Image (spheres, one colour):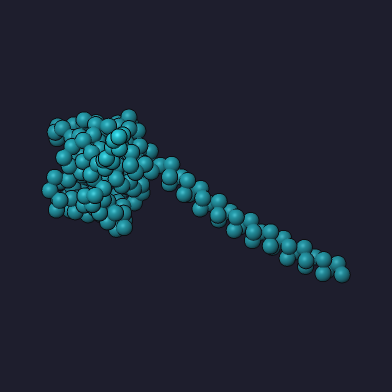
Amino acid sequence: MGARISYVLLAAACGVIILLMYRNMELSAETDYLQQRLVTPKVGSWIPEIVVRDIDNGVAFIGGSSNVIRVIYVMDPDCPVCEASLPGVKAIEDGLGKNSGNSLLVLSTRDAGTLRMYREQNDLKSSRFVHSDVEIHERLGVRVVPTTLVITADGRVSAAHVGVLDEKAVNQILVATRDERRHRAITMPSKEKS
């Protein structure tokens, strides 16, 4: 009889352990989701006009109204996730080259010399590199690197991606640059009172 109670208690303990493991997996998935939402810039938010100089001393506009769609890639040359994203950055650069007027701006807090060397070593010739600061990143809603944003011609974020730029992410970014409906301001007709 004592052995039977031991088996029942052992079975109950195993059931509790399985239940706790399942709940732990659920909590882990919820935590991952909330962390991703916390660090991803909000799609639809308006980015004010930010004027910066690229490392070649040209003027670049981030946010605000302009006549082009901008893709902003915020990175750090020493970041391993940014390094893993390099093929995706090149694919975006190639894809944007086919859409005249659209541009890829690469932002980093690193100095201009480091960014020039990174650009040359990785053959990113058509991207514009900008030495930025944390304040600019905060204004863009960027909290971690790498972060990729698509900013419409009217200054709204139409797509945002945090993490490795895999094939799926690259396709989403390029589609966001081509989908003209997402880049037009929507106006509602006003109701006139009679």
